[in-house]
Length: 238
Length: 223
Image (cartoon, rainbow over all chains, first blue to last red; front, side, top):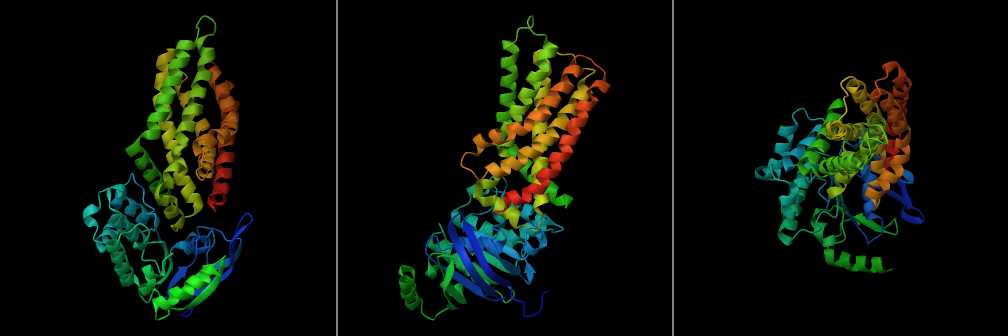
């Protein structure tokens, strides 16, 4: 049951195996509204597995995930409603226009007027003029904005971001950072998975390092990125 | 809930209509099969009404496999399926949406193949057309359900197009056998009462496999 101090995300003992490979090993995570957790780690550390488990896209071998105090289970479709996902893939169908893609999402999220909701989401990303274009005709930066429009269409309280800066040039990456800063509100929490701490450093309120499927570090964001980078390099090597 | 099913089915059909790749492949495949059988047959050796049912169902079976390959391959692009799975829509509704699209699609292919079949084999089906359409509907309803489930399974593999027929064809054998058993007397002008056991079997197959696939789908799409 949700109360005022119910965490937005509460994961306990999350474990996931792929055959003999242990991708996550008993990870605990508590994220409150207004927090932005930056998750770093080397390749194969379990970052994407963690994110997909939090999204309900991957069933953990053991452990539980509560979103807003509600267990995230396969059979409870409504438990997924507060979640938005942005990854380096757009989740858009190439044969549909950008507007049609967003209208489909708005319909699935139960909006009474999917067209108006989709147009509002595109307007917020200044993409209304490309509404009738196919995703494949958009630049990488514009495609990412369309994906953001899709991810934020239902105003999720939890935004999960999986390597959102991949493939973006410097200008598009700056723009994405600005957009995410604007979306960092007191009612929303974010988990950002990335390789490069510098990409999302200013967005984060907390920084965590995942290694071999376990937390190796989890602290409020340090003041100095350079000092953290040095410590992170050592942590990754050991 | 129905709104979600229709939205997902409508999306699939719109995507297919715009690319038309699977539709064209399935229709061309069906036309070529009928053409080859038409020229290969010897009417003096085997009567048309004896041969035609087998040709019809062989064509339908393989054209359907070609058509059903598309059901989940479209979801692989840009990880679009994650978007469906993230939505507050039950896995069962997603299955029903995908199933409905595949059913309309395969029935569409059959609607094009059937007139070609009648034309090539020069059959007078004025009396048998209604029951034949019913047989097509009943047989297709069942194996498309199985095909949709297997399409979801193989979409994650590297050889999805090769794997689907391997998995699906054994499950298509029972409805195909009974569909042929129903079609033979229909073409011979026998009364409808003779084909009722066959039609009943197809109906039972539909109910059983539609229920089973609906129940299994959530586990299949779970990573």
